[in-house]
Image (cartoon, rainbow, N blue to C red; front, side, top):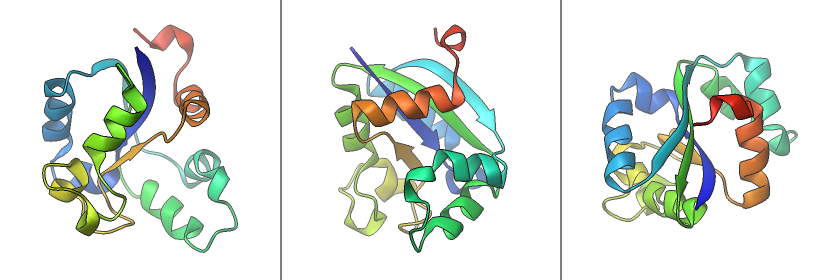
Length: 137
């Protein structure tokens, strides 16, 4: 079993799709080991996305991620990172396969409904950014 980090982003939350996405997560066989509803500050979003600091989209991304509530989660499944990324679909919802979350709920590259770790090292950082070990069940 492998843990990964996931976010249901402010656009999906505002559109009322967070519950639908959670249902899909359970239907796909993930175990939810941690779950929090947060309203990130700009500074918290900047810290989380520090790897993108200095890139042209950084300010837009951190403004968006601090624009409304989101759900942060630790998911677990066999090959969990790949499984979650496959369920999310391509970053650009227009390029995402039918049946993926981003195709169904995303509207643009910037507002694509979900986030997920891309590697074990990334998952470790992202999980620890939002969760202590005592919060993971």
